Image (cartoon, rainbow, N blue to C red; front, side, top):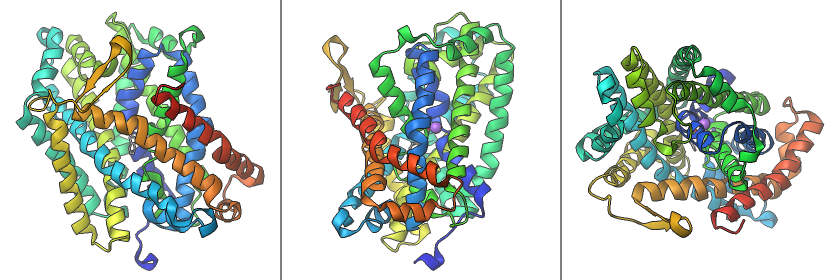
Length: 460
Ligand code: PHE
Ligand code: NA
């Protein structure tokens, strides 16, 4: 019941936890690599637009729905709409969020495990100049060893479980209060170093000088899709985190702080990585291998390269951990709130199930590497997807966007405008700000999301 519901210690703890969820592999690995593929500046500008116009409004929508209902996604999605407006039917989106949480964490944790493995490699001096040329083989050997990958995946899941067992303010918030400042300092150190390298000017030009001839419609939709992933939208995280918020804390200011922090960190990670890439005379568009293959080979050639590599993989690991625990919290909150399980039982049981599911992703690089669940792409660009690839594809392209659509439709059409105004009237948004936010949530966001979905099926 509500009287025993846990809460953050205050607005700062909430913002740190939410920034911890938002800042993850999406900022440090995916944003730089898709920016690299899509030609830099113009893509970055479109991405910033997507965050401001769609991402931030949906973030505010999720936080408000959570704070209003004081419930996890399944409860939050079904309790605020009257029968005439869909009532309990909206709960389907809550279910989608919980199922997505299980699947997403199962492979997010595998990649989180890689960061631990790579940190250990860096500390033990693997990335020497002689190893620079073989970073691709180092990666292949690493991921195709099922025992090693399983151990790192287990360590990562154990860390998520350990934190979530501690609860909201004494577990999640406390971890974020320690990990996020350390993360920020490590990133600043690495950014400062990268800015001293020869490639820094080129990196800044690449990221901030827009060349619109390089922009494709597909890139615009990719930017929009990524704006959801990076803000942890469409999966109920911000609903759950918002549900631990008390009424006097500002949803608008918190949402603004979270989206600004997430964006600045993505930009800083991009400048840092491209500074290193351009200094070595390499191309920015190396794709998904950017962080685990290209970068290690470049670190290996730098003076004190092991140190820089260690700093990099440690910060990446911290970012992944604070995101991973937020995903686990979605599943745990459901079983605690709706099924009356204790936090301890829910965390251990569902953390364990997610770990077991993750083994399918671990083995996608060895025993199961020939098992393909689906084929995507067109023409000669067909790609067979392993279990790992399939989960990544279905979640990044489908589940989160559908979830985002659910949030926009629910806030825009399911919940009454008066209820939302009542929830947000004391917030810094003001009457005009509220009206603008509501219009975006009701019309602009759903249209944008539907375009992304149509693009996924090849219609647009
Ligand atoms: N926002 C996280 C990142 O950028 C990923 C994430 C998505 C976390 C959805 C929770 C929910 O890496
Ligand atoms: Na992010």
